[in-house]
Amino acid sequence: MSKQMNTVVSGDESEIHDEPHIRDRRITVSHIHALVEERGLDAQTVAERFDLTAAAVYHALAYYHDHPEEMRAVEETRRERQDAAADDPRIITGPEELPDS
Image 1: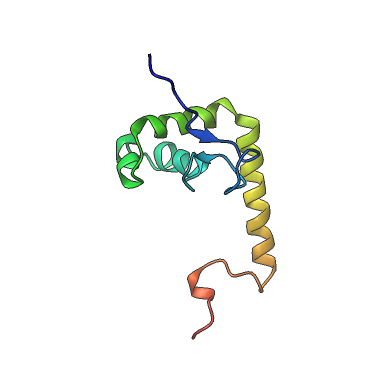
Image 2: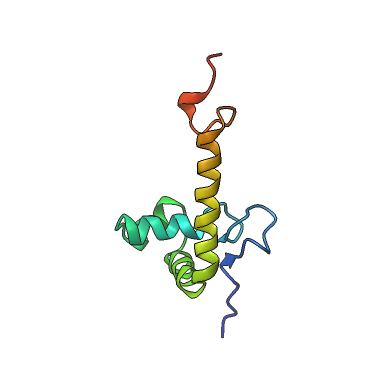
């Protein structure tokens, strides 16, 4: 019998990210969810794009649906940060805002 390691790290347990993500990667559960369930990409396509297993993609999707309160909090935090960035001209939100070298 094989032993399965947790594929997803919660934001509280992570040293590299403040939201749930694939273990040892910076690919968030929210991003996986957006690609598969909002944009309609095939899970295998997403796995290949990010050099993941299909199982890792499905684990991320399962985590998203198993932790709805945590995922809502992640989305709210993201919206708050976007609003703050929109209100503060010192915050660079894209490459078009970088000063010319």
